[in-house]
Image (cartoon, rainbow, N blue to C red; front, side):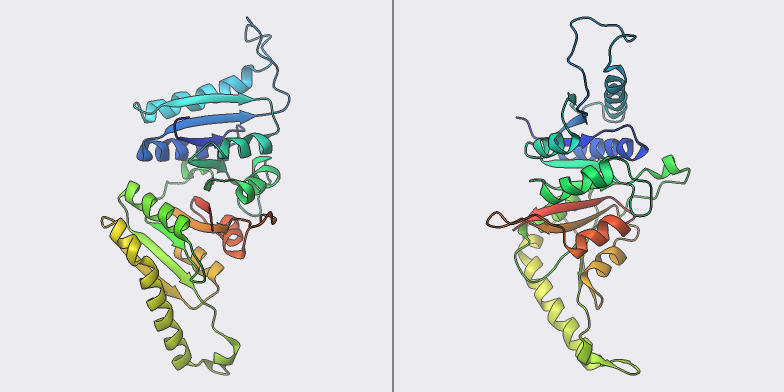
Length: 289
């Protein structure tokens, strides 16, 4: 099957914003865009039916409208529509196994949740074989001016391999021709805290160590993607807070999810949870070893 970016559609403003974002991304990466609407109650296709009797009319219209908009914005983009009579969670996980990337709408924390965010989005993020990007409603859909395109931010830990995470982040920055900010957070230990603040000797040593480790980690990726302008950021806060803070004004925040080993249960760590609930830009959750 030709490589695709799959976006889940449910008709909400968030899913339509996700479709626009996915179309832009598919065009940048020169991939096919697949618009997926899944619902168990979709009816079998009749041989001939008018809109008055076609029970799938509104589902077809949703996909058709999103497809027309994507092709108008990107005339050279290949777009396919897909109506699936399955549970959305099941359909999206199946689609993710066949996709380079899956894109879903997100309400973020504190909003009324659609079936995509919560019942569907979080399990898909936790179990999908490919990166899953969560997109909030576009600024124009909220009645605000859209933010200018910014850099890509990736939140990294330094205790294990994160090749898949860094490859996705560098590729995303290269496709956009924007800088990549690599953010690492490291909490100050309790013994370094003093009544008037922190022991600066300890924090300076922590920062030097982290900068050295981060530079060594990024060296092969700078060589692989020499066109990407890389900025390193060390913050003496929790890794979760460092990622969210660094993503202010970003075009994309990239975080990792450890792939389960030996049949273990999939789960999201605190960095991914913080990014999904508190990040203001699209968030890509990338499974990696």
